Length: 251
Image 1 (cartoon, one colour):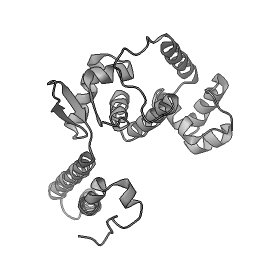
Image 2: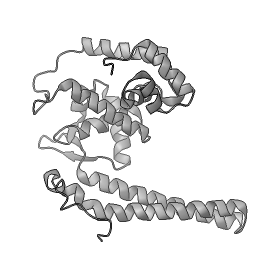
Image 3: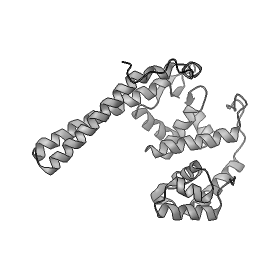
Image 4: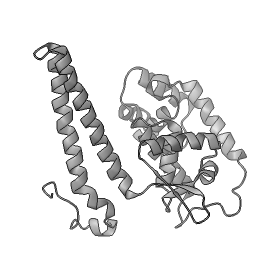
């Protein structure tokens, strides 16, 4: 399997594949590349509707140039702990951010969230994020505001009274519960439409079908989140043995 950066010819093949509606896995197979490489390439360069090979190639060259020209980290900046490969960590963070982008988060917001989840402390200050991602404070502020509004992070003050942005295990649970509430609002609104459009009409029947489906899914999400919440607070070493993982019939 070829390694290294994508060539301009490969990017042209990706652009053709995206235009033809091919799945990323199929494009990857044709180029003998990992699917994650194709997914990340498209998502970080305009997405499936805006990807252009020439623009993507130039953007990659600019990013590489900025990395070469970037000043060394100042004293006291966080370094890679536990003997980690810095390049591998950076590559993984990009992959993780791409997954968040596919879930609908903006690019910078995804990068911030990925950075928070891949730091051992699970928290960073605004200045640490600026340094880590090499972006402006305004970009961090906007991304953090969105994450906070969606309940994906929480804010706290450290001993130096600096505001820190935190991700912890309970954030995932709260996010699932928030999603379930959103489903419930959609169900309520759809059933209001049934009354407005007239029971028995095709439009009302469509809305009622949507309401039943979303109601079932929403209840399932909430129930599963409650049943599995303990997984978030169980050590990975313990849960890997299979003794502490919640089962579907556990209330």
